[in-house]
Length: 287
Ligand SMILES: C[S@@+](CC[C@H](N)C(=O)[O-])C[C@H]1O[C@@H](n2cnc3c(N)ncnc32)[C@H](O)[C@@H]1O
Image (cartoon, rainbow, N blue to C red; front, side, top):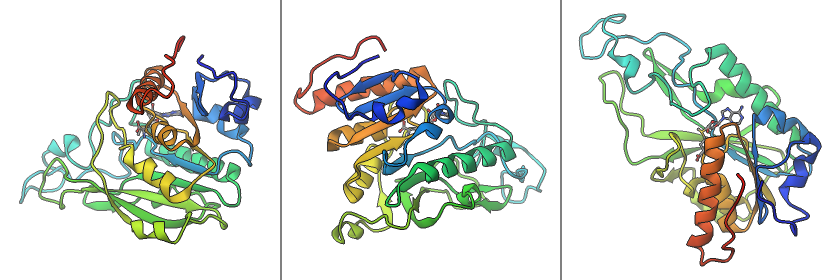
């Protein structure tokens, strides 16, 4: 574990009741290695006021069958090239997560995750939940299915990407994702001015060795717009949310079940230190 002895108000203390040591804890940025379900129930309600996250999309499993055709004129149920096409496929190859769990199980899991985040958020808290509409089997699926009954969807921000892949004749190429703003009643943007960001955010994807990172610009904009006290990413991946938080000088906590991605996040946080003029040149150890 990497610790900062002087950081007495670190997010590490927020989840101390789960009695699992942090994987990394420095400069107000804390990473826990493990299943987020082992941590989220222990989050105190006064701790994190902003959650920014992107869960696995379960791309290897679909709520209804594919058309199975792949060029104009082919009949439904015919050729099966679409299994590897634009709107679904074998799923993302995560190090330690199967992106093709049964659909109903996936929906239940995500509803429970959002509900448990909603439970710990304070009255001015907010969850920015990244997911994407998918055209499957000739029908549009919307991530609204993942909303639990008790949480409130305030707005859908569109993350517009510069391009898409996998052209086929059944739909225009999808080039956007959703950022669902799931907000408690007292949540507000930090100013009227930042409302001017609008609800369509043009952002290029970032690349790193994680198979599905979102760009650091995305959590950076959220942090800029909300001025949170402490952010959390329960599906931390390569740590983009934590990198953005560190740059903004905001406390952050991340949960990630893959050891490989925890190590990648630490490396990025360390690199980020170098990016910003060597303010803290300490090298993480024993990760
Ligand atoms: C879409 S990726 C997140 C990518 C991240 N936004 C980034 O920029 O790198 C989802 C991540 O959730 C992780 N994951 C899946 N199930 C998890 C769980 N139950 N607890 C913690 N992490 C989990 C996966 O290993 C994967 O890295």
